Image 1: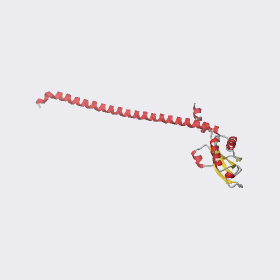
Image 2: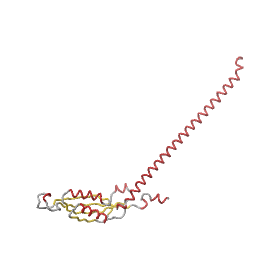
Image 3: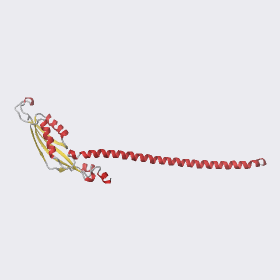
Image 4: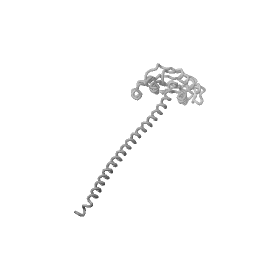
Length: 212
């Protein structure tokens, strides 16, 4: 043991240095791990902020898109009061362009559309419809389809065809090609014209304008 006494001091210093080095390494590792955890949390916060930003941008673009479409609806006689004169003008113009020889129409009183599915999907929006009965004389059956197709493109509003009936008129001709009249067929159709009533508070963009 006597030959180790001169080394005791050096061994003690070496052991203390090892302990200090271990302590420094432990503290440094903890500090590094804490920094990594903080960096990860900050990255998650940044990613969440980016997601919220892009979502807000998408929502704004969607709102602008539908707000511009909504602004067109009153001009197309879809929102607000009925514009029966516009419907009649579209019908008469279409019949004139197709050279239909006879046209009569009758519009019933507007009434609410009682559809539970609509009220569930679009709460706060009241849907109304007005039935229009059309009586026309046609040269051939194809005139009816041409009339409805052109009316859909020309009409300033929304309508659906509830039903149509067509029958051949009694003539002395053996066929339509040999007929001397333009009234070979008679048809009666019922169209439903739709309008919407939307509360002022539900209109797109209104709440945004009020908050400004």
